[in-house]
Amino acid sequence: MTTPKPTTIPQPAPPDIIQFPDPRPCDMDMTTYYHLNFLAYPSALAYDLGNPDTTVIISEIAAGLRPTESYEGILFPDLLIAFNANPAACQARNGYLIPEQGKPPDFVLEVASKTTGQRDEVHKRQAYAQMGVLEYWRFDHTGGQYHRAPLAGDTLINAQYHPIPIHQTDDQYYWGHSATLNLDLCWQNGQLRFWNPTTQQYLTTDHEERQARAQAEAQAESERAARRAAETARARAQAQRDIERQARTEAEARIRQLEAELRRRPNP
Image (tube, rainbow, N blue to C red; front, side):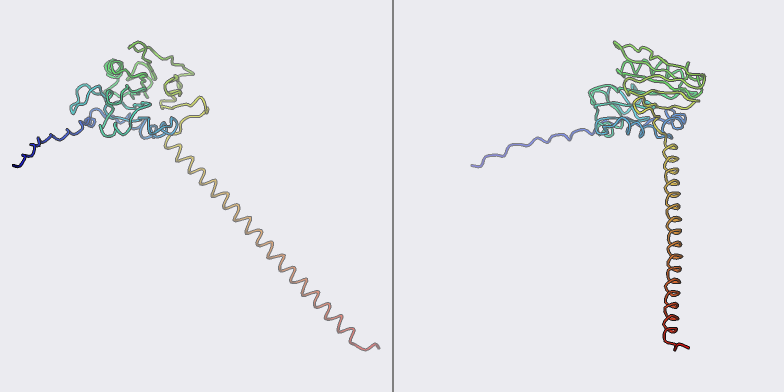
């Protein structure tokens, strides 16, 4: 008598990970590109903050409290930074899922535009507080036409946002300190800058990086040209010395030859 084989119940395949949707065209704005991404600030911040394996730095990618393929309940921060997080999970999810990461973002920045100004100051401020974002910053390149101020920041204390002090040097320079990033955010002549108080330097923009590389390459080429010119001058001087040495050698040989001839002649 044969024992019947146990029936194998097929197990359903695990569901694919639910990815956040890409931003809609209306969620993307050229002001973010010109004042943030074009300047390559995400990469500059990644270099300055370090720890790329555990630091999430993303721009215009969804963030939310639950996975969804719809646009309900998610935001697309212009800049999001989270420490001690999982960049790989963020990439797979196509966004920052707070329960999956185990923590809210540490820092969010929104760049003002004509269509998002009021939403940044009211709706997003409330939403980021509910998400638990530690610092929420707003930058308005127009100096206050879209937001109420050129630069503003809030820090979360007991689930409520409290303003971060903003200092004004003159009407073309405002700055506030981000304790989360240990950087000063600056509004300088309508441009967003990040100042490192430790190194006493600005984080360089992509244009500044290219300009610095071009200047370094030009300086290096100038130094190479100077070395080549010096080597050429030395070679010419050496050649001239060789010619003079050869001329002396030949003159001395001629003198010895004449002296020998004089010695061979009979005395008168």
